[in-house]
Length: 141
Ligand SMILES: [Zn+2]
Image 1 (cartoon, helix red, strand yellow):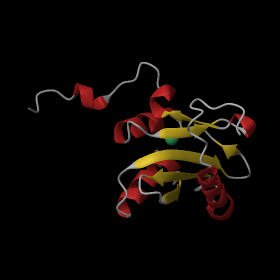
Image 2 (cartoon, helix red, strand yellow):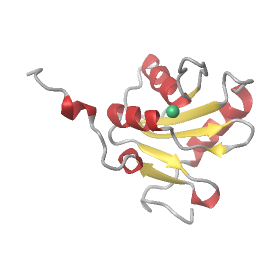
Image 3 (spheres, helix red, strand yellow):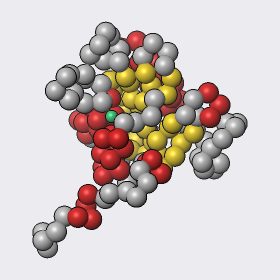
């Protein structure tokens, strides 16, 4: 039982963390691919991806994962986690990814923290005073 969970009824998806860690260990190479992400789809499937670093703003693993999931027909993600290469463990999403995840999947939970403090938190909890893009699209009715 994890020592700390934001939602005690939501156990941390250890299989998901391990899936991301496995991809980080086996697929990350050099400077282009240094992060892996794994997400649990609503139907139970796990989708994985790695980042595609580029100095012009190449996407984080979480963003690549959104496209990878769609390419597999998966449009509903319930939980996501990112793990760094070289045994860095769980890495929290950057600000851009937090916003993108919120807009694509408002109910998604993100696994953050390390060691026995690994826990799943709603993405909105990672964005205080959340900006909801859809709320500000005017004049389309
Ligand atoms: Zn990011």
